Image: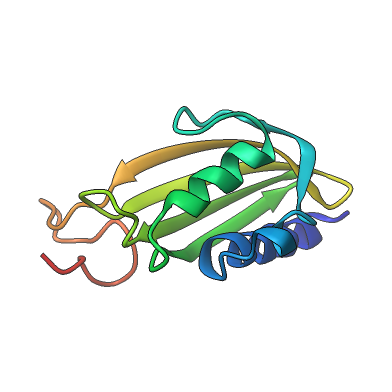
Length: 129
């Protein structure tokens, strides 16, 4: 798979799982042997699916930037209305094999509602207070 193909697959997978909440469709994107490096949920795709199922149905994922190199895709995104005190701004790092998501790392930060620079962490505007 090319890096561009991997990026397209990763974004389609996130759309299916986080925005449509379609676990059955998501199974086609995530390997049964999926390795997870996020401390919030159990290893494997079932741990991921269980976590996503626990989120409010209104949780939304938005991509601001996706970059790919080789078998890796990095997505700078926001998870809003996630049931936590603040939206999350996240860099998801994914490794794919033959078009399937096989491994994941991330860096998660609560979205700031203001900043010393006056610039938001995500998009063009700060989230509503």
